[in-house]
Length: 191
Image (tube, rainbow, N blue to C red):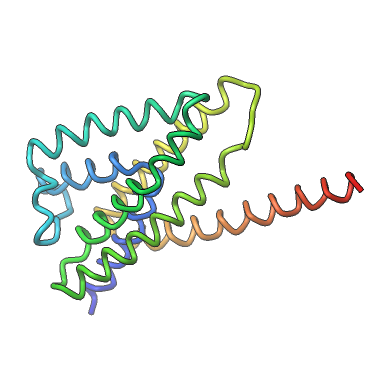
């Protein structure tokens, strides 16, 4: 029973991190498992710790981080990469739960759903438009550091995964309410 509790905590934190930075999260999982630093991949996901997978994920993480910092590409990249982020969340979730077929199904389904929560929180966090060329790279850097910290801490200390899920859900609700209040006020002014 305790192993399920830890696995679900890992699943939550890793999947939300994959919703924000997909390639970085999978790279962290592969490196942590390969080096034996507090995380072991579930059976069937050992390919993540191969040299080829790590090399490809390093390149993808560099591109992902770079494209996200360019103000003219960030929105386009965010829209085009949604399927990759959902798939990475499912992979991270499946890799975190090593409890047979049921664990695999729970990991894949919950991982994809929680990655969507991470994608949505990131979408709400970003301003719709900005005139500054510094704002988007700084927001992206904060996202990089948050996703990195969430992935490493969730993988090595599973209870942190529950805190990542709770904080992301709270943040998502708060941003939704602020956006509704903002645009509701604008509708009143335009009448």
